[in-house]
Image 1 (spheres, one colour):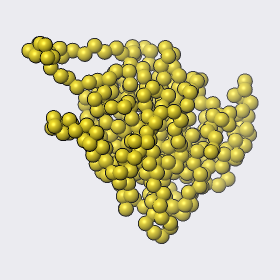
Image 2: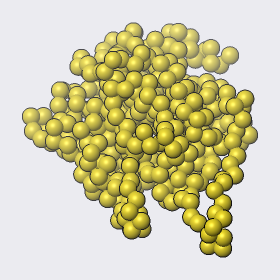
Image 3: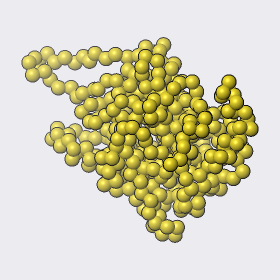
Length: 366
């Protein structure tokens, strides 16, 4: 198993990580992957999958506040309109490849209807959250390899604790800054005993633009992972247990742009760079009339919120965690052969040599 960036002495920012340095350090959050690697070059080739994030065990009946932000919109995240209108999220979050969005959407609907038949009985509809990046360098998107059973498997496999990174789930076929990448995650412990976690599906950028904790690595690496270039994308999901209202979560989402930019993205014209943030602090249950006073239902919810003046640590932690999650996605991935040839993993030893040339590790000691 490959080491993560922090295990090589690379430190992103000032805040300490959670126990797993993962989005699952936010209590109740679980992650599951379903990876599909099938076929050989010239055939019906699959290098894809689906990653599912569950904010809690029963998100439909225990909705959470959420908000999102689109840095560049050449991509898709279904369900975002409803989230930004209501400020509430009620389904799992699924990450996959571009052409699989419809199938994954169907898979989430089928899973929720089977698990919670009362949704159908009340004639409610479900608008799942499904986000995508284009994995067409390695995967053949035409065949739309993901099936509903893959979505169910990812949900059923979802767990807390450590999270698999790199070429897994939705990140299986992803490429970042010309090197093999995919899923990455990181977390931060915050003042007042709060936690913030990030998970990315990283698929953006050019080799020469790659930066790791301020060092322009891409300009000095001798070989790129692939000569193919696609104006790729990145999906960022931020979770926190801090009591944030939807408009504050939109503000938090915007800070992800700084973390992505620190790694070398300038949000290319063809890039879908989309961010979603949610808070687990408040469970928002459906309104039900009072059985004792049906004519005098209580329409008011009592909700705590973090004051705006206290948001700066979360903003800074989000930038740090996004930057580290992107690095972890690169460090965790290995070489992969796919539709347009082999995409090489980044050479970690060479990365460390370049950073040492910049006296990076000596500076960190100081």
